[in-house]
Length: 459
Image (cartoon, rainbow, N blue to C red; front, top):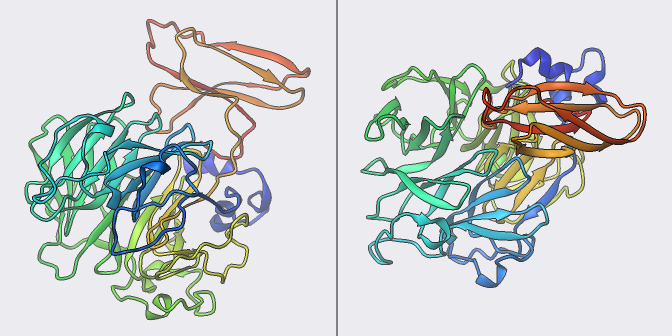
């Protein structure tokens, strides 16, 4: 992650370039217009599996998702969706089609057959996949809650499509929160009222970081990690957001950074948060109704999605809450298409958001449930001229336009979003350009490369 000062300097357009621009202004300057990427005519009939095999490979906009609970992208523009009640992970491709990448549309439970093991991900059963974490290269992790009497699992699917179980429930009552370290050596996950860490070096050992088992009503949900390493976790049941030091062990009194502990009846009844004075105020003074989704932005603040409130806030680095998107507590709301999130701010644009993510290219990815939609507010970032790739020859080639600035960049690991700039080039004539990395292959056998036109999104 870039230092904040460097990152702010990279926001070079719109109001963010003005004197005295706020962090909220700077954030808005990185976002484009609302678009729907997936979800069709959802019919909530007792929460069944809505998936029809005829949808496979078809348009994601006509596919019926089955209470999708989270969505996250890879660096190539694919969006992965945990289609919970269809017991599968879908992929929405950049061309708008949707395919299954894990699960076989069946699940294991005492009444539906036994666990059928690991292997090719699309040939093995999943059981209520509720959590999802995707790496830039398309490797992804799944958290399954399981069925009554059936163990949940956390599994990894590699780029070849092979699925491996890393961790089995064993009474933990897996929930939905899941976060994986950039080097994949450890992960955080939520049970009903505990936050835990699993280490790959000692796979049989799980450490409890936060223990709210003795706190009535706690229902931990989703996880993200701040730039300082603190773990932020939402508590849907107690209407709070906690900040947990990664060094914690069996912590019982976490620091609340957002929420008063009370729900917000006005939000549940779809009241206008702007008129109620719920905008631009301290996050610790606001009631957030069932906060669930959480996602940090490179500016340092985070998005917070409230399940029953239906709304999404941005909590800035001064802990001030800004109403980003207003939504309904239930229903099939789908509004704001083609508009920036600041347009018609009092209009309800979504309903019951389950998760929010900041994608690898700065897209805001929202997964809603009652309506079964995946909505995206794209980051204003040009597509790389050369997509990230391993390149043993260390050479990049692209067609340049005269007067356009270009950046060539290298990363030895995509997972932490860390890129090293190799050159800035400002060609005076249009035509082919090449660049060769002088680092010998023997000194750096693994590297990824990309070429950008002068970019606005500061990764």
